[in-house]
Amino acid sequence: MLRNKSRTFQRGIRPSRKDLFNVHSSPQLAAGYSGKVRDKSILLGVTGGVAAYKIVDLIRRLKDEGASVTVIMTEASKNFITPLSLEVASHNKVYSGLFDTPMAHITLTAEADIMVIAPATANIISKFARGIADDLLSTCLLSFNKKVVIAPAMNWRMYENPILQENLRHLISRGVIQVGPEKGSLACGEEGMGRMSEISEIIEVIRSALSKKDLVKEKILVTAGPTREYLDPVRFISNRSSGKMGYAIARAAIRRGAEVTLISGPSLLSQPEGVKFVSVETTVDMLNAVNRELPSTTVLIMSAAVSDFTPAKRAREKIEKSGDLLLRLSRTPDIISEVRKKKDRPFIIGFAAETGNKVRRAKEKLKEKNMDMIIFNDVTEAGSGFDVDTNRVVIIEREKEIRLPLMSKDYVAEAILDRLSELRRIDG
Ligand code: C5P
Image 1 (cartoon, rainbow, N blue to C red):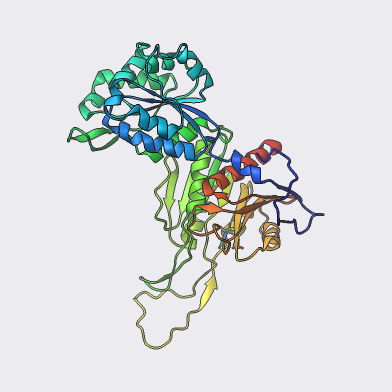
Image 2 (cartoon, rainbow, N blue to C red):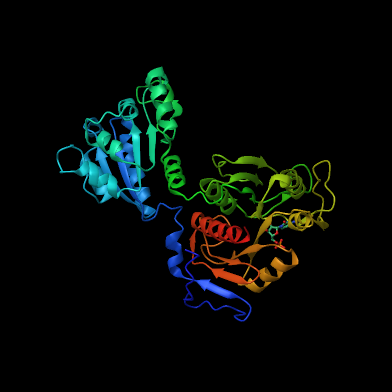
C-alpha cells in the first residue's frame, strides 16, 4: 500500500532530483491494488440453475485477481455442473453435504471474507430469507455475519412471483447485495427477467462489496477519452485515447463510495454502473460540461486526452478536395486552467501523457497549472498509455513522487484513489 513507506527503488529507476522529492517505489505495491479482491477468501455457493455452467469462468477470473475461492454446491446444482469441474477451477475441495466434513458450516464461514451465491435459485433465496438451514449452503448462510452477494437466475414468472420478491426485499433490507437478474432469453426458451448477470458484472459487485468506502464524502468529476475538433461536418482531429484509464478511475471511485460524474469524449467503452454520465465531443463541450458540474465537485480528475488545437475555422459544408489543404489551428481553452481560477476550486488531478521519460516536464505542468497532483505516463513505453489495459505511472505531488510498477489500469486507478484519500484525510 502507499502507506507503506518503502524506500526500495525499482531496479533501473532513479529519482531525477532526489533533493526535491521523496520517492516511494516498490514492486510489491501492485499487490495491494486489486480492487480489494486479491488475497480475499470467497465462499461461493452454487445452486441448481442452468447458469451454473458459467461459474467455472467466475471462479477462474476471481482466481486471476488473486482471490481464493471455496465452493459449496447444493445437490440440485450437480445436475448442471460436476463438483470435479469446480474443484479443478478453484484448486480447492468442493463441499456439499452438511455432514460430510464435521463443523464445515462453522469453519468455512469463519475463514471467508464474503459469501457469493451464483446462480441463486428461488429456493435458496427463500430459504435464506426465512432462516431455513437444511443443507450445508443454507446453514453456512445463517452462520455467516459478513457481506453476502446473490445473483438470482430463474424463469421470469418465478422471479416476478410476489413471494420471491418479498423475500428479496427482506434480504436486501438486511444488507444482502443483489446483482441482477437481467432481461433476456431464458434457458426455458422464454424471454423475460431472470437471466443471471454477466460474470464481469458479478465480479464488479464483489469488488465493490469488498472495497473500503473511504470516498463517501467526495463528489468526483472524472473526464475521460479523447475530444474531437471538427474541420467540417465530417472530418475531425482527435487522438488515440480509448478512455480506459478514466473509466477505471470512475469505477473505482464508485466502489469506494464517491458520487461520480463521468464526462466522456467518444469511447467504445460501456458506461460504468452508478455514475452520472455526460457524453461530449469537442474541448469546448467538455469545458462547458465541467463548468456545469463544478459547483458540486470536490475532486476533479482530468484524465481526458483533451485536444490542444482546433481548426481555426470550421467549414459549414464538407471541404472539397482540390489540391493541398493548409490547415490553420488555434489553441483550445485549457480546462484545468479555467477551473483553477475559480473560488472554492476542487482538488485537481491532471494527467501528463508524454512521449519519453519526461517526468520533469510533468512536474513543471503540475506547477504551471497549479494542480494538486499529476499522473505521468510515457505513452511510447510498451504496455503503457493509449488503448492498452495496463499502465506504468508516476504519481507526482508538490513534494513527493510515487513510482508504480506496470499494473492494470484498474490497479492504477485504486493507487491514485488511495493517495487521494490519504491526502484528503490529512487536509481534514
Ligand atoms: O499541458 P497538458 O495538456 O499536457 O496537460 C495535460 C492535462 O491537462 C490533462 O489532465 C488534460 O486533461 C488537461 N487538459 C486540459 N485542457 C486542455 C488540454 C489538456 O484541461 N485543453
